[in-house]
Amino acid sequence: MLFSMAQTAAQPAMPDSTVFRDAFNASPIGIAVENLEGQPLFANRFLCSMLGFSEEEMRGKHCVDFSPPEDAKKDWALFEQLRAGLIDRYQIDKRFVRRDGSLVWGRLSISLLNRTPVLVVALVEDITKKRTAEQAQLKNAAIVGLSEDAMISGNLDAVIESWSAGAERIFGYTESEAVGQPITIVIPPELQDVEHKILEGLRMGACIEHYESIRITKAGKKINVSVSIAPITDSSGGTMGFLKIARDITEQKRAEAAFADVSRKMVEIQEKERMRIARDLHDDINQRLALLAVQIEQLKQNSPASAAELNCRLTDVWEVINEVSREVQLISHQLHSPRLELLGVVAALRGLCREFAARHSVEIDFRNDDITQPVRHEISLCLFRISQEALHNAARHSGVKQFEMRLGSSANHLYLTVADHGAGFDVESAMDKGGLGLLSMRERVRLVGGAIAIESKPTVGTTIRVRVPLVSEHSSQLEAR
Image 1: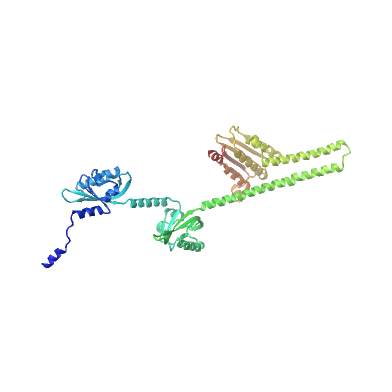
Image 2: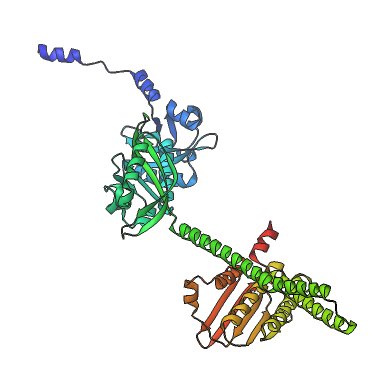
């Protein structure tokens, strides 16, 4: 009996309604009591603050008034199941509309309060920050998934902890194959010492941006990559791992190497052309001028006895001067055709054929369409230089004396064809050997946005076909600016 009395005396007294009211308002979660019609009867301070309404304003609204229509529809469907007795509670994440029209995210938990009359208790947890963070993570995950770059994270022991879809595309390892493996699976043995030094720098908080190196794929293929690495830090600022972004630049490196090779070969072409001009000037022009000087000196030393003989010898000097003048003019036209600027591409090509045929004792059948549209200088120059190169190659290697040249046109393009029925050659073999003339023609056509096809077979002959736009892509871009 005493024990029973002592136990009863130790029990705390039941709190009055003021305590419950204070606890209701002090809660860090929004609380509302509603009737079965969904109308708020009471709302605590947190919920009022979260939504920006006073408790009195909230009592004048319906629960569906606090959400966008699509969210309210889902909530009310569950609420009706609650009213029908099909469920006694439910939970839903949805948006709430604040008084100022802005939206916040809340986790709504609804349950019945079994009493008479039956009421509904609504608990609302503000999850806006959590939801924003989740959406940011989803967005970042989508970006990582769509990125062509490899995104890899690892710990300070250089063990891979995450492996993006881009990493799988570049290196060939699936995520399950890569995670848990050392990062050295993609690093060639000869570069692993360098990687250890980089890791030491990361432990000290260093960052690396756009470091170009070599990596190795699952198949054993070496690729060029541009790597950026940053340390991952904890809340105290200590380094706990690294994030690495690697971009495959293999094709870029190949393109750079090809461009460097083309540039080198173009310089070789220029040097060979200078050497040819120098030989023409020295071996031909200079020799003739020297001979002319000798003839004039002989006239000075031994003047002819008769006017007829003097006239004859002066005629010889005049002929030499004329020949030298013609050769200088030919060299000048090879370097720069005045016809091209003054008369256009058709007249320039016709003149080239006539002069080339006369100089090399060959026949050139030149035909052209009636070109009424204006042709830009870079297009005309491209066709002129290709024609020069094609004719020189034909005269040097074809073994025949008859050539054909056609210049056709359409609404948007010009078409040049230079052909012979001579010895021919193996095009692929010539390109592999670095034929500078063929390379020069292809590069000129590429620069104006055209196309070139070189068809040749031994003993059958050679045909060079060129298609160029009447307006080059480069010029169109300039005009569009």
